[in-house]
Length: 466
Figure 1 (cartoon, rainbow, N blue to C red):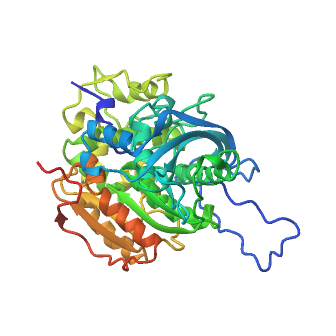
Figure 2: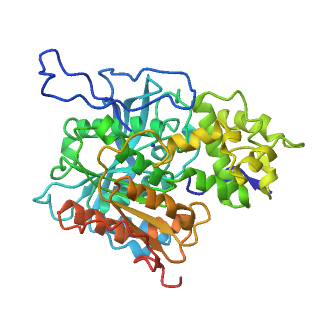
Figure 3: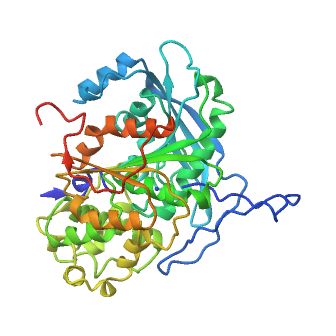
């Protein structure tokens, strides 16, 4: 007996379009941002909004229980079994904020967290570096929003802040942690949705820290930023970097870290239908979210198995859309084999490489893969990709060919593979290497990315008994 929610692990998005230049701007000398391709895979066309409210804060406040000294955060990390990540150099204050963004051209509200470093001995002379932090899979409803959680959701922005970063951590659209319910479905691994929401969160956070919340940050924040993400957020970090020239041309991205990133989505699904693994249920959940967001096809038949007594194709989407104020999916799924989750025709098409017989699902994968998308890379930045040797969801060997393709397209990549690490462990065990990569990029001392695939090595925060 397995619950779909139990398949959730850590798997599976961003900014307002820059407004047109004012009438008195010399448009002959100021290049307008390029247009991001939108509305792919036959979805209903929409026009990207240029509403003046995009990227503005509508509400904010301190996050209860998250005004901690370094020792207080060390105690929490040790209690959670992460003593390898202690001691942290700074305390932390967390803020929760609500901001305006857009989804499929409609103005909506979203939420997020901001982690502020709290130095022990006064403000530093140099400004704090800023990180856009994109979280792993949290769920599919508002009740799953990291900003609404008391412990797990705030933990990563707090950890990054305690290591000296102003951490901007948006909840994804469809995961709204405060205020009125979301009007957008959460679409895991849809880069288009993530990109608008994430870059608007950066704009809103900078506005807040330069205005009403200015007194809460001891010192100042740098004008540039780095991007950090894990699991679903690793895919999101790469999409944020890819879309920055389109949606945030004024943001100076210095470097990117993507831990456990599924950049080749076809490869993940091929493995998920070839043999039962955690990726089997997770990829199906992602497809359900994609169908809701793209608005087609009409149902899940032909993708999800619909055998009695479960009739998953008929029931699972309703279960995900009627969660209300709970994050747990109240559906028992008898799933022990791939055939319990996926329809035979879809499995046959994928395993035989007949992707043309798996539409529109294959289009969804291609539109959101990093080398299969039609979004042209216009200048990506030094990027560290971190994989786990024993990751059953993002299998390193199955991402290797796409890593090489990314290098061929001009991505500046460096790879790290953590020996013996599973999906969730990859992020935590390699955190010292990730922070070192970002700090070297920020201080200008980073070596040029090699675009060389990495063999497994023991990562710095691997527990002693591993």
